[in-house]
Length: 346
Image (cartoon, rainbow, N blue to C red):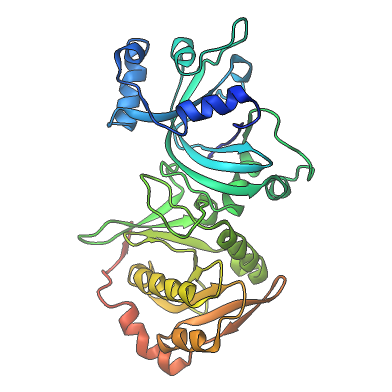
């Protein structure tokens, strides 16, 4: 079970300085003054996860030892401040070393220093208001996250699912793997595996960033679909990660969500659907572009030309489908799957 850390990072001038020193910029942990303070096990772990010898770091004071007892590689951390989640990271190496902590974050005279240290495998910017986070985990709307927290179980899963956050070091057993000859494997993932992001798909070392508005749109559409939506998954493939993957009596559907309905977003949705379709774990019977509002008629016709359905939010919590003609869809199915490898489940 993946844990979600909530870490204030902008409250005091000292915290802001720590952020600037060890999160905004990477730290070279191979320099002698740092390397000499690491235990052999800590050094080996850091070098394994960060072979370039540099990493971003954050940590906690001894008062949080109990909370951090089971925090491990692949957990997710939400950095908060200014009434919002400012960034989302993935936990790398976790260890206790007061000397290293004091080197990274020199404590004030007479004040308690940090001694839990963790590196970040990746970090992406985010803009999630506290009100949205509070609603997801059933906290009061005005709750402001005054200190370090670690969410587990249903609350952690609610954050991961609703904001579509997936750590790269996902826990074993969370995905079914499909073997594709001579290609990277395709993975089917539960919705709670998925990551949050800000401006479309962006590849970093581990995180793929998805616009927060797209995550909200997917969440609304899943709720609109009811039981079928709750069964939605995603699949990982060499081209990226699908937004939604549905299987059912009506066949397999691959869905790509966009934060706006302008021509540029329609083109992006079409391109991604055509890119993902050959990798669909089961042959795609329907490709769907999902929008928060009705696209222009010429853009709907553009999607229909390629056999792609258009779904848009007609009213709050109400969606309408504008299907491509069955003739066009049948014509395009061969193109969707052209070059797709035979898939064998393992």
